[in-house]
Image: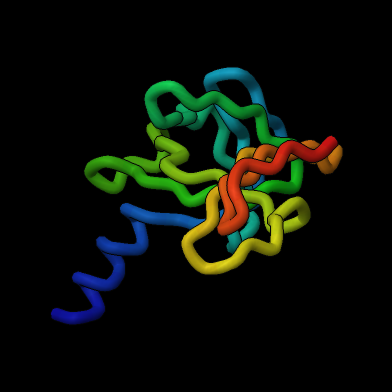
Length: 109
């Protein structure tokens, strides 16, 4: 019984690497080597970004259907900033950033 539940859960979620990234879709290779095309990209309202190939993609497949997926979160540890607890920042792959930190707003770049 638990194996069946675990197998179903594995069909719902996946972690992979973005290989082709477009404005509204992404292609990802998941950890078992499966290539998934035309995954929808979900972005928070008022914030847009265009990740680079090699990014980490966390995927959801409604009803466990691998032919339709949504990239809920796309991150990239290659460009992660070192922030203090409670700080936030906007940044890109070229080192440009706007940090809201303990000392106020700092713009670098």
